[in-house]
Length: 160
Image (cartoon, rainbow, N blue to C red):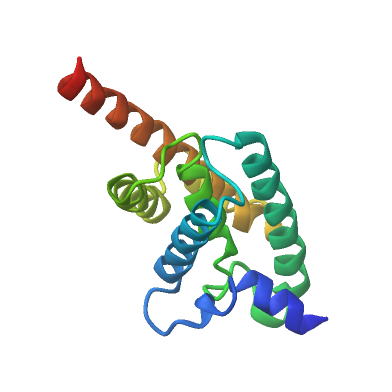
């Protein structure tokens, strides 16, 4: 069972990346979004309730896996990157998937995740898997709001 927790928490092994495992996890999130959209499984804009359900289920899985691995790996280990996947997915909620939107969303999410402004750092103090997931979820919310504003401004500028 530990193997399943490790595969889940590391986002299919991305957390084992020797260089920037958080960035690797966010990239896995982008790839998963692209595959879900490409094969018409789930869309960030056309099936938002199903997408939100996927985020919630994946978050619960991440909390459980992280809690189960905390004794072995310690508190908020860098190998746990499912939180980056979730944060990236939240960043792209209700946003049409295009290369440019995903790239800007990725940059915004990584900025908020690394800088941890506006209360994000405070969420890390929550216990166990909840703390691990919560800070990236809030970073994703801030990135999503910023991305939505940028898209609205650009649409208004080009088409307004």
